[in-house]
Amino acid sequence: MGKDKLRKFAEINTFANVLQLEAGKSMKGEWAAKHFGNNRPIVLELACGKGEYTVNLAKLFPGHNFIGVDFKGNRIWRGAKTALEEGIPNVAFLRIQIETILEYFAENEVSEIWITFPDPQPQKSREKKRLTNPSFLAKYRQILAPDGIMHLKTDNDGLFAYTQEKLSELGLTIHAQTADLYRSDVVDEVLSIETYYEKKYLQTAKNINYLKWSWQ
Image (cartoon, rainbow, N blue to C red):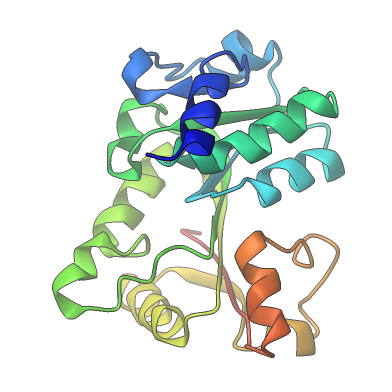
């Protein structure tokens, strides 16, 4: 492991806004009250990477609490450090495998979930690893409030089509969908937030797909 990664791992151990898997900490059912000290809605960014969405959403919506979830501590470091440096109090990061998310959030605890540019896991043999696989969707449903909303932004056309298919099979309600976000009438201030990877894709004129859905 490189020195820079080691430095970042050491630093996040000192960050009050980062909870790590190895720390054995869980705020299940108590995120708003115990960690944020309020009763505001909880919004997750899954596979958050550097946490651009988590941090920028927190700036736009100070009346909500935002948690970026990822397993790669050296990526989480960037978003967590930015939140600390800029004094953004409604941001936290959780370092876990997303497969274990039910161990960290209680039923109906989350109001909204963003999945931003996840690994599309294109191989058929890795379908169960896709974050919009029905097994993952079932977990999200458990922690989402009854009227909870989900979002997917991806550059991968295959994952977009796959997710559309699975949502249709499950009879879920699609509120918005586009295969070319920045040339659509769907795009707004929130959807215009760009992640590190999205900026790279846009530089090559790659289309960005977007889906918004719920169970109601």
